[in-house]
Image 1 (cartoon, rainbow, N blue to C red):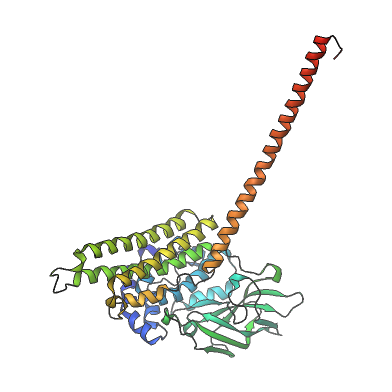
Image 2: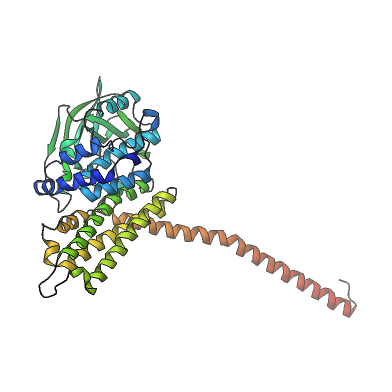
Length: 414
């Protein structure tokens, strides 16, 4: 069975029904996560060699867009597990016994994974640097100590994928698989964001948490352990599809309100007015354009990092502008919690917060454009030099021919 046989519309409805309460309480959204788990979507990217559906990164984008229409917080929590399985499908970095145990466990409950990378002092690894979190070698494995920030879904995770450096000489850096039930883990409930409230992206503190020796991924020398933003460009595009889904939900609420709202002085739905129709058209242009941009990139440009980064930025800006326009057009109903657009507006403010952030992405494109110009200029230089040499040579020959002609006229030897 492929993921495409799953009724994504049904999952979206279940998430949408539970989303307002989860947003209001900021509690972990178990109802939504259970619905995603029951549909088999958390393991949708598990490789076929492990008995999975083998969903691609483009498939992931479509799954996350559907989940985002229902509840972006649930979609974001789910995405971290989906991406972890996709990474294993592509790279086989997990110890096989550990990974198979994890899949077996996932038959009976939601097994939720997330990378714990950001730190209070370091900030986002997307901007470079190495973690302060330390993996100390012990007789039985590793002891992990440090504090991580913005760990999405912290209260519901079954495994933290902790980025840490070792105490070895020379040092190495890698991702340590830390089961959440191990002693020494403390979730610090300090997530107080404008939107994505149910994502529960709290701080997590690790104090000498024991990890088996083999439960580590990508343990490499620190000189090559920094994050490659270009390599993660496709994942960033797929992640942006979460917010596309939220924008589509806001667009639907906007249109529905336009058909249901009949002012007494007008006598017909406001959806018939030119002002509303014009705004609806602008919103459709932005949201529909974002969908085209995102999925065209995922379907056709996976080997082109700059194209993917450009697509993510353009689509994200469209999404943000579309929902802002919906709120501005409706006035008070748009910022009232009853309609739902207000929640979508808050959630969508996070669309370009994820690493690499907007300024980092723009810098990547700027450097690429400048490098491209330099390469093109360097390629033209040999041609110019060759043309000059040809001109000089031609000039010398012409001068020689002229001398020969003058000598012949004057009777002098050449």
